[in-house]
Image (cartoon, rainbow, N blue to C red; front, side):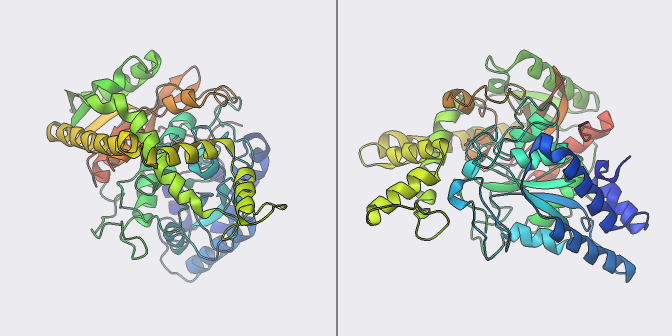
Length: 485
Ligand code: GLN
């Protein structure tokens, strides 16, 4: 087995036992990146020098007999909307193509503090708007399980890098499914944490009330360890909760006896591919065999989920993206006639079509005369959606659903039809609207492409989600291995 194929916890063992050095791990991962990147296209920026420096520090610590963290020396890829001091952060947009932040996101500081080896910044849909990574102004990223297919989005590069063995772990961001959907499409595990558990400081905002950064990996323990490293209060983000968090991985428990798993009927309806439903139900039945109890529940407002999500997220995006005006950040058009013309040309040339679509939709739903009819209604729906989840969690501990209605689609299949693209987000968006945590774990294949089982919990119930996923992983032996490329 090559080093890049191991999980983080296995690599940690090897480091502590001095079987390998962090430098060897970093080199092996760099070789893997060099061997596969042309095929997969995960990266916007490869940070080889930094990776080697990070690794060297860990090796010095080990040589001095110092204790190292569970993530020290573990290769990580970081989504390109997370600010990294001194390293380009493009959001895969022409607007920020040469933007080098002078400060770091809190999550990135925490990643560095735990001694991780940063291998690079990874591709995404422009400003995190999309479900296929095809909206990137940088490149197309391919699904390592089958390179004719999309890796999902918007955290497509975060997912593909982990599935391809180009990184052991990665960070993505999730506003309406952008961690879970690409995790499902590429056969890795992805956790979208409770809103307010991970700092958004230094995350380029898409929809501030929905955005959360989260971990992706190939084992539940690894995901739990990265989540433990990044979560927690941050004085630079007033929306972070002040609660104390445990070391999630040490508390992992695979006993699901008596665990009440809710099955919301709206997530198993007509729009979801029959073979996906079958894979997901097979996985749920495995948990039932171990003593979990299945409960039927209903979340009727799911019918309005996409409308509510696209109104709320676009409204916030139209406001957040107003800052990209050619004055303060990044790109400015070359030829213009006066200030207004400069704004217009900069924004026309700097943003891609999908981003412009969202800004227009968002400005429309917030405009006077239409605000009550659209934005306010979506806000009311948000309350209703949250209330329905709260009801469901009175009778169950966790909800289980498909992560996506279909498996990965072919590159190019949906780019010209935004409504079709949006429809694929039906299983993930309400979780962000209600601020809940959810995790996607691979549960089989349909026509050679991975299927994701989504576990949804009440606020701050990450341990329950991780435990349930851990139980499933134990039943299966392993749920995610590096793709053959
Ligand atoms: N696919 C959804 C969208 O395009 C979700 C994106 C995300 O979670 N960042 O908005």
